[in-house]
Structures are given as structure tokens and as C-alpha cells.
Amino acid sequence: MILDKNYLSHVDDIEYFPDTMKALHLFQEMGYELFVVTNQSGVGRGYFSLEAVYVIHRQLQNDLRENKLHPFKDFAICPHTPDEKCHCRKPSGQMIQELIEKYHINLKHSYMVGDKIIDAESGHNAGINGILVRQVHKSDFPYYKTLLDFANHLKSNP
Image (cartoon, rainbow, N blue to C red; front, side, top):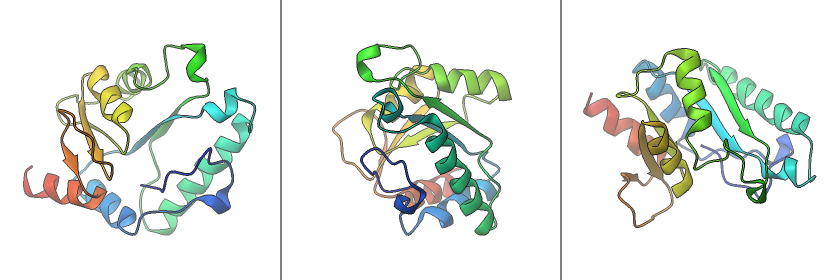
């Protein structure tokens, strides 16, 4: 969805891939609700505050609205460092499982889409489909070159 920035903590650093909004439109047209599940170890490392993460998320919501999209349904954030070995940090499926329970999400028709193997693994660990985009990894997870490629795949294979 957005270019990976090392410890994104300022709205000025948000940069979307060119196909992001079009892909999100397709997902919403197909009836998918959108969530964000994110590790934010910069908070645990003291690089920035949790409030800075909330500011980024508010900007994402505003950007979606400006593009005539429904905002994200919810955000799940792990602020811990990898050394803390918490239960919520991806690739754990805990944050996703909490969203599934909170919103009564259908597992069969749900996807965790991300550009890192831990994203796909966290989806798998939560009992949903893990999908990789943008980063080629040798794994058993389905891979798509772009988010729009994945959206078009879903549209043509309901």
C-alpha cells in the first residue's frame, strides 16, 4: 500500500504506490473491509511515540476519504521490539485474531496482504490466507507483483 520507510513517523513521509487507491477501490467494490495490522517497533525503541503512529493512521484515513474510499475499519498495532518477544508482534496471528473476533470476520474470504513474509505468516497463523505483494520470496504463499494485481485476481476469481 505504502512504500516501506524505515520507522515511518511523519505524515510527510507517507508515499503510496501508484496503484494503491485503485486497488483499494476494487477491494471495497467487492465488499471487502480494510484493516491495518502493523508492527511499530520504533515506539518500543523510543524513536517516536504511539501518538505519532496515531497521527500517521489519521492521515491514512484522510487520504482514503479524499480518494472517495471508506476509511480503514480498524488498526491493530504492536509497539514492541522484537527482543520483547510479545505475543502480538507479527508473525504472530494474535492481532488478526482479535480483529476477527471483534468484527466477526469470515476466515475463508479474508486475506492478510503484505510485502514481507511475516505479513503472510501472520495471516496464516491467524487462520486466514496470507498473500505477498511486491517482494519476491521463495515461500508457499501466493505472490503478486502489485496490490492491484491481487485485487484484479480476486475480481476475476470470486
